[in-house]
Image (cartoon, rainbow, N blue to C red; front, side, top):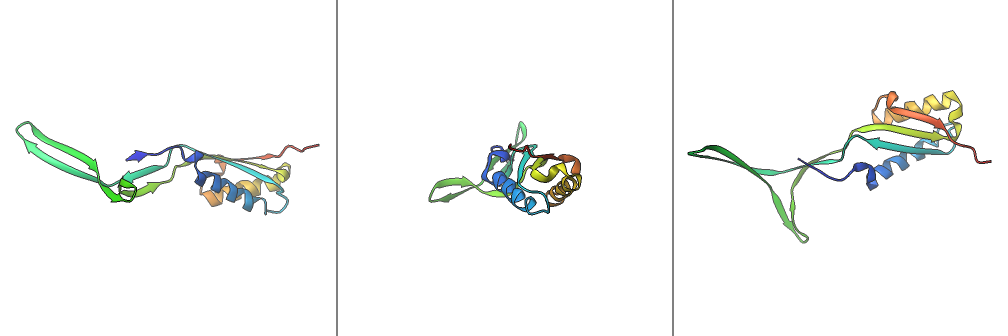
Length: 130
């Protein structure tokens, strides 16, 4: 298995935050919403491997090397699957979050859509510009 760069720095993470901001801002009395999602680990890619076992006088040895495919950009490993990182927590900042019912509704919505425990979601009232 190989790990790639931090998921939280990728376009996918920014798109997730933007989608959450868009849908949460549509909730009654939520107002403008900002979202930040943090992750426990990086996205993982499982690469196909060619495993070879050989027996000799010194015992059995195993060797593994990535299976590669050729394309116009050269050789690249065959990716069997990609595992998305585990969400550590979410912060939601909303104009209407001073109202407790709005705060609870926002936390419940984030928990539901991401499949995480509500304890991993914190909702705060947005600072008012005066």
